[in-house]
Image (cartoon, rainbow, N blue to C red):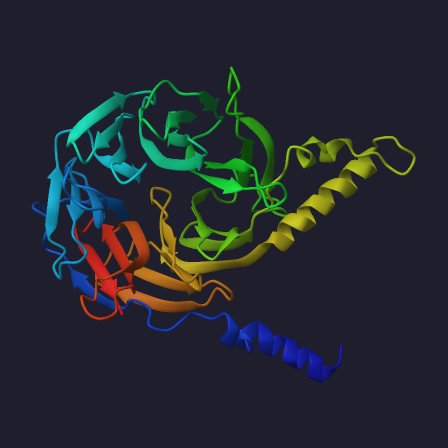
Length: 413
């Protein structure tokens, strides 16, 4: 390589000369507003903005759904400058709520630390059904519509994943359709689509494993539904360490469903990975890398090593960004991240009270948002577009952060 070409290559690597096309977009949220509308002070556990209907005569409306350590769930009105409380639920869960999922505009599925799932009807203002299939912490919920069927998956610290099959015409939570028992605790899960055949696949990331595990969904007409392992993708393909990190939070890019952001459990600082999904299909999963024949048609140790190296190289190429976020954390932290709605970057949590914004294409630190108490743990983040500016711009970008300093902060441009 010539000296000029080498210098140009280094300039692209260090300075990002082509960043104008896909860099961190302007007008990012940076101005904090500490909300004082919550009726009581408590640690903030989760935050999301969901479309819900309250009451038989009400119209669907966006609400900021906030859960706190005092077992309460609050619905805040984002059209109000102070995010006034529209409704507070305090009686339908017996322990702090860790995740909330809107199955439609009328039904909320609420997961708690005790392992109980509660399906709540916001129009009738009543509990539809309660289930306690998990024996401890339900940390993540996910749903996916398929025709008139709604699949719901839950991950718990009892090292189990439950899959529920609901009817979209009559939303009821019955017995699990399938149960997945893992060798370690699942940290997160989500439904993804295979880019090859478009089929839905359940992605599961679990503790003490650098792999993303992909499971084939059961048929809608199967008498005994099961989740079948299709394959896995290593996020540390060339690592010699036994365990280097856990993929603690995984979020799909809002502008490209084949790209995910991964917040890891690495200490003393969180590492961020931007990764292209290598979703296996039912056909490709049959090709076992440890049984690939050599040139003479026999499986040898050399042919196995070559096949495994090819897979590792493909997995390494799929890692687009691998950077330290400088966000401090310990082995007891709860790493969290959210994408900006335009996909230009992500925000990550920390244990020092600072929200950091990372550019998705380069891994550069682009924003350092200080509003929480120094040294406090951030537990939840949400990013999206609302009419929080209360002016002519009805779809302004908003970031919501909450943590163990008992502060709920709305950041806007």
